[in-house]
Amino acid sequence: MTDSFSCIQNQYKEILKQYLEDKNEIGLYQAQQFSKKVLEHQISPEETLSFHLDAIEEFFPDIPHSLRDSFDFLLEVMMGYGMAYRAHQSLRDKQKELEAEINVAASMQQTFLPEEIPQVDSLDIGVISVPASKMSGDYYHFIRDENDCIGVAIADIIGKGIPAALCMSMIKYAMDSLPEQRLQPGALLENLNRVVEQNVASNMFITMMYGSYDPHVHHFYYSGAGHEPGFYYSQKEDTFEELYAKGLVLGIKRHTKFREYHKQVEPGDFVVLLSDGVTECRTEEGFIEREELIELIRKYKELPAQEIVEKVFYELERLQDFQLRDDFSLIILRRKV
Image (cartoon, rainbow, N blue to C red; front, top):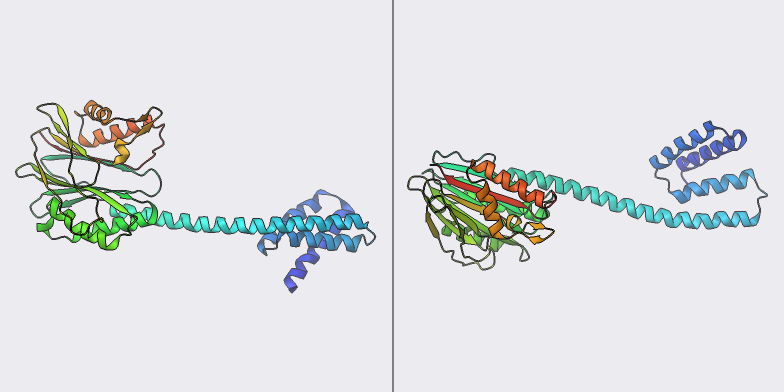
């Protein structure tokens, strides 16, 4: 027994003795203050009870054996409680450590997202991306090449937490490091697919849609890697059509080719890119239909692109009682009239 331990034990005896003699509020206050010292020196509940038992035996040497035995019984109970409490504290410490790591990873994720939306004279761009929890599996990225063509990527990492954040960093830097001539959608996805296949665990998958808009001729080229189909709105026809791009999920097969698709974008037309958290919005009646989503976008189609994505998000969040069940990402690129 250390000197410090003995000192604390003696202090307890003095406080208890004083209280038994005076039985006043001062003694109870001293007991409360003493409990802080017990925590400070990491003295367990069963050790504190042992202080009490030793003091009682010293103050009342003739206590009945049955009462002495009851203290032994209580001591065993407190030993079990002490072990359970320490195990609980250990779990709490680990949980706090994990939460701190998640907070760091969540902050790191934010640095991977574009700080601002590219400004193009002929384009109106709207973006919203909201995680369902601290960590998001959704990712979007803009690239502007030397010819002022705008590349836009939207991806869904099937996996959450810190691995997803690390995967996002890999995708971002892989995209940023590609030479200008490799920014065409099919070629870009082929490059990313090789990077993902070599560096991502087999239990993680990445879906992506990547498009490139040429503001000089107003062509939108796009390719997909197993991602949720978007939409194309024609102002002239006032119709929405599915923007489907067939392609294998990134990282499955190293030498995968990705077909490139093309749209001529007329004034007032817009492209809708999204994650499955948009189309798989769950209400009490079940998942919303894609037709319902189309009608919701149609409802706000006359607004600026940023207002459209924000209005659609609010409506779908409200349908879910403001509790997102999946990450939500929605991007609109509209050719200005």
